[in-house]
Length: 313
Ligand SMILES: [Zn+2]
Image 1 (cartoon, protein in one colour):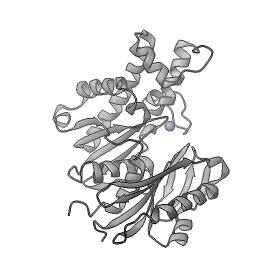
Image 2 (image 1 turned 135 degrees about the horizontal axis):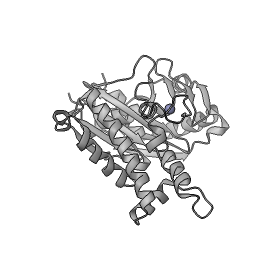
Image 3 (image 1 turned 135 degrees about the vertical axis):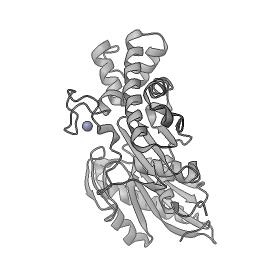
Image 4 (image 1 turned 45 degrees about the horizontal axis):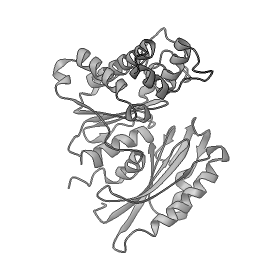
């Protein structure tokens, strides 16, 4: 049982940036270090730089404190038992044995999880202080993912792959997704999809591909097609959230990720759809909100997993 004098070091391995942070038993970040992930150099190279950061942060643990472990958040397919990243397409890593390397070096417990799942843990443990036992976190970024807390437990599934929300089918006749399925949600309202659809419907922007920021700006400035692209994306996102609410009957649905955090229009459109289509009894019981956390949500989730059963006591 770990208590309030526990300290955990959280690691969030992103495509471009890795964040390593020392977090105390109140969910406060005491110190953090950020550096480029450079995944193309191989996972061993990245992990050696992560180990340097952990060594520095370990020295910041107060004398009375107990170092209770290292938590790691990563995209991709994770094996929580073997503590390795089985495959992360955005990092290009196969079978990265990060857990065993860290345990051997530091001799503390190591936990590993999918970044969207652990973001839900951050919301549950630190955001709601475990007051909300049923919540869903949805990240809308270049891709789409979700983490589900049901009855105070993280829903992980047989192989820790639960929450692949971006790959639920929205259109059975839709285009093939990179995952092999057709008409996946991610192809309608992720950042990648919004920019791609803008390229097709609006043509190139001064010879360049559209970014989602360009599309939102054009929509704000009254470009009817850009506005329609955002509206349609919001309708898809809203409908997919309606399905989640109908399946899990949560108290909170929390949205985060670059696309949601940097613009309000998609969020508003999704909300309208949810209000129109959700079963009223369930709609009345659920709050739809944006995350209060910034880029630290990954390290907060990676450390929060150590406090899943302790915070409310
Ligand atoms: Zn897919």
